[in-house]
Amino acid sequence: MEKVNVTIDGRTFEAVKDKCVLEVAHENGIYIPSLCYNSEVTSSGGSCRVCLVEAHQGGRMRLVTACNYPVRKGLEVKTDTPLVRRIRRGVLELLMARVPDSEVIREMAAAEGLTEVRFREDTGENERYKCIACALCTNVCAEVVGVYAISMINRGADKKPATPYLKPSDVCIGCGACAYACPTGAITLKEKDGVRRIWGKDFPMVRCSVCGTPYIPEAQVDWIVKRTGKDRSFFDKCPDHR
Amino acid sequence: MTDVAQFDRIIERYEKTEESLLAILQDFQREFHYVPEEGIRRLSEVMEVPESKIYAMGTFYKALSLTPRGRHTIKVCTGTACHLKGAPLILETLERELKVKRNGTTEDGEFTLECVNCVGACAMAPVTLVDEVYHGQTRASKVMDIVKKQVGS
Image (cartoon, rainbow over all chains, first blue to last red; front, side):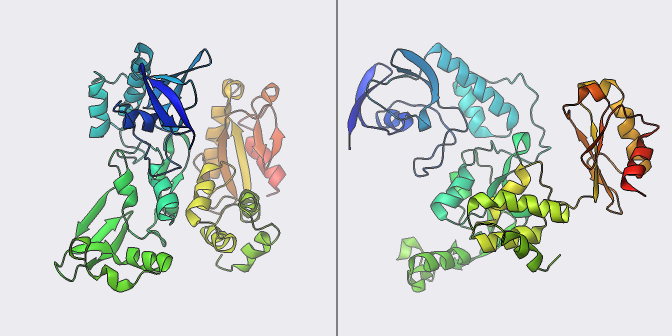
C-alpha cells in the first residue's frame, strides 16, 4: 500500500494513501468530532457535517468533511482554527435545533461552548425523535447486514429512516445493528420476556441452553444459517458459554 | 388490485435493471393514478430489488403518489404572480365546490386538487391546470365552469 506524508495540526504523519483524514487523525490521537461516520461501513459518512476541517493543498484551502476526504501527498489539515470552530458550532447549533432531545449532540455542542440555540427547535411534528437523518442505520442494514429492511424515506425536512409503508418489515431480522450504529440513539430497541421489539415488530429470542438468557432473535439465526451455512446448533449457547 | 398480471404487463416492457425502476413506477402512476403497494411488492420480486429501496423512491419523487388520486388533477398555481392575482380565492372556491381539501382527492375519486408553486406562465396569472391543460386569467366565479366544460360532466 502506498504511503504518503500528511500534516495534521502541524504534526506530520505517514499514512496509507486515500485513507480518510478522520481515521488518520484518530489513529494519531487527534480528535475530530463526528456523528454519521463508522469506519466499518464504507457507505457511511459525509452527511452530519460535524467533522468539517480545513484542507490545505496546492496553495488552496477548502472546508471538507474529514470522514470522507482522502489523504494525499502534501495535504495539510487544520482541525482547530477559528474558522473550523465557528463552522462546527454552526453545524451543531442547527443539529441541536433539529433534535433538541439528543444528549449526544447537546454534549458535543457544550464541548464547543454552545448551550443556546437561536433557531426554532423541532417540536417533534415529523416524529423524528433524536434522528439527524444521517442514513447510517440504513447503510448498516444494507451494506453490513445485507437485509435492506429500512431506507431513507421522503425528502428535505421530512426525510427519515423507515420500513416500507411504516409497517412491520417482512425482511427485518431484528438484529438491532441499526440501533447499535445510530450515533444519537434514535432507534428504539426494547426487550422483554424473551421478545425483542424494533421497527414495530416483535422478534422471539433464542435462549442460551446454559444460562437461559435470551440473546439472539430467531429470525437472525435463520438469516445467518441461510447466508453462511453455519450449523444451527451453534446458536444453542450464547457467546459466553460456547 | 391484487392481480399481479396487470403489474407484470408493465414490468415486462422494461429491461431487468435498477435503471428501469423509475420508468416503471411512472407507468404505474399513469395507469392506476397512483403507485399501489402491491405494485411495489411485485416490482421488488420481479426485479430482485429490495422493497425498501423502491418504497424510498416512491416517497422521494413528487410525480409519484402512494395514495390513490382522482381521475382528474386540478392544479392551482399559487406562485407569487398568481397569488397576487387571486389564486387563494380560486383555491377556496374549488375546495368548497368539490368538497375537498387542498392536496386531497374527492370522495368519488374524480378529482385531486393540488397547489403548485409556479408553472412558468406568470403572464397568464392566475393559472389553473386541469389535467395538464393551462387555463389563464382564471376567475374564481368561472373556475367551476372551466372544470365542468373540460371534464364534460
